[in-house]
Length: 461
Image 1 (cartoon, rainbow, N blue to C red):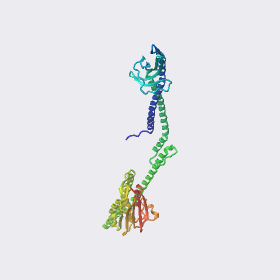
Image 2 (tube, rainbow, N blue to C red):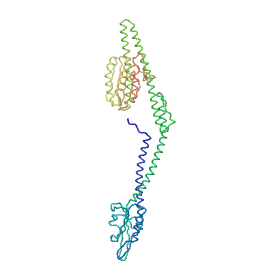
Image 3 (cartoon, rainbow, N blue to C red):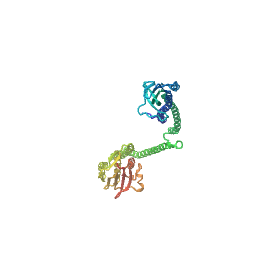
Image 4 (tube, helix red, strand yellow):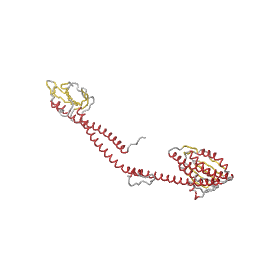
């Protein structure tokens, strides 16, 4: 089974990923900002060199010549790791000094607005190297020469890239130190925030298995209150479940002890006699007692099935069922018993009625309701099994009914109003549990003529 990751490490991991993304974005931004700053600084130097060369232009014998001073190129000596190229063209674009084939400005290159000069800056490739070039136009106005000379000065971009990388590295270094500090701060902050949760875990682990007291809320933060309330609510339900189970076991032991003791006494009494008639009578009464014990054991098993079925419904195991069809099948199965007792069993279910439920539990509910009605209806009476829309089940009988003051108690386990009527007192208790599992509402009413009408209202499917 995969072990879930720590909440602390998950927070740190997510924060680290976020910081890495921010660092990469900041590093790229710092690099391009550094490159822009480097271009601005070095472009000014390029333009100064071009102006120095332009100042050395002169006319001799009807032609333009260039006297390139050393200082024009010496500007880069102390802060440039690359190479410098220059080119001077006369008014007819004829090379008069410098390097050949130095690229000119591409068509459409705008004049710079950053400096008061007829200059254009652009990037190009020269001798397999990336270079930054400035093209400066110098006006030539002589009696026999009038036009614009062009001075181009180019520099390889190693210095600019180095400066941009230095700025980006410095930014990343500062951000990395900040990220490490933030992660350490988050580590200590999360550890401090989780201490109440650790204390809560310790308090739960140190409790005895039978200690189901609510957990205190005063020692945890407000954010943990819903968790503690949920645990307390679960503990309360668990305690109630244990109490019901303990009470059920005690009641079941009591209910089984009495008939078993009576059965044992009856058998011992029969064994003392030598009369075969007494033996036969003892065996017949013992068989009846055994039948009642078997019925009680079956209903105890039915209660266990109700709990399993309720769990299946809660986990999404409910099926789409036709309540009318279930009632029809149950009525046919119970018809022989009704005939044996002299009771007329009628079914009123004309159309399908759909709901979501567990078929075994619903059959158990129908069986217990009809069996209870048949048990309390005198011979010649009537029991009506009725299904109506949207999802209502009714079982009506002609028996003595149940007084209003006792109708709430009949759903208690092992409760019997009439001790003369055979039964275990579990039938309506099982019905109540099944109704709770299906979120159905069960109510007791007076019958149309006499007796009792049991109505179960389901949630329509």
